[in-house]
Image: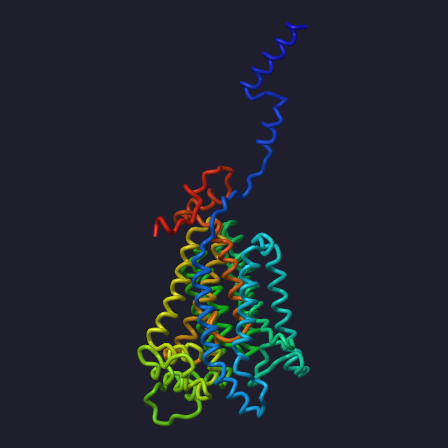
Length: 454
């Protein structure tokens, strides 16, 4: 019996040496059948995002506190009421900041895989709400539900909570779904394929622009949505000829959308006339007062609570024109400081994007960059007169809840993704190797150690 057992063990050893062992160990089975999984070592997120976002929100609250009484007086005199108090707008802005903080924390903690699985549903809900708003506002004229202003229905009236703008949800849904779609096509190697990638992206973009620009008459949001998708397409590495063709088509489409709307034509003509035209009419009233606000601020501004343009001269002083009020209140130095904060935040987004090993994550961060950057560029450029006047908010500073909440939520998502960023920028040729690996050593040290290398 003993000799038989010795012969059996010797046969097993010989079979294992030649790779013919028919009874592998359990550990061997587990190792050979285990599927490769995404192994990323989480680390400390990039807290600079919180720093710059927090400073911008705080500055916006200070501005609302400073010009809130003037705005309240204007509205009370216009509507013959005493409803608006001196602290009304500061209080509402504080509530918006609270909701924005909740959105930031929520999306920084919500697993990205959960959002990926529901990206299509989020985008579909955004389309559905935009369609419902058009029906309720333009066809059924239900003023209790659809809030319309100057012939444009862009908000749902939600009672004491204020209003909700569904186009912001659509932008967020498009950001997630397009990033997921392009990332999948890039991994499949069909990024430049017209039928599988280019045409579907174009059709989805056109559908979104139709709902936002045509039905809601919101050119500013349409431009921001286009910037989100364009940023992701450029980052994806798509063929330059295809990108150039899409850019040319986008310019033509923008021209058509301007031509079919008389008020957009008037804004463009006012911009082209500049400050030298003799007849100064109502069309240039807004931009003239915005420049007066910026010019009267001088180097250091008139000081908090001393704004003149906010007393009724400058339209939308707390919303789209808040940058002009900042220039009047804090002067050239204050306006430049605000721009520096935005630049620091945008640069941080790009640094995070170039250090992410996953294409979909990278596209999401770049899409948020395009979202935030387009709002800042369009708003500031229109206030200083280098771009036609466009109704678009200055992120985290303008009065209002929906835009602030969704932008803060998107930045919270970036904050979460920064935990996956590598120590050094990812090499495109090696990204697939680092994306799926069972090794504990991931691109050197898997840390976003900005304190040591920047």
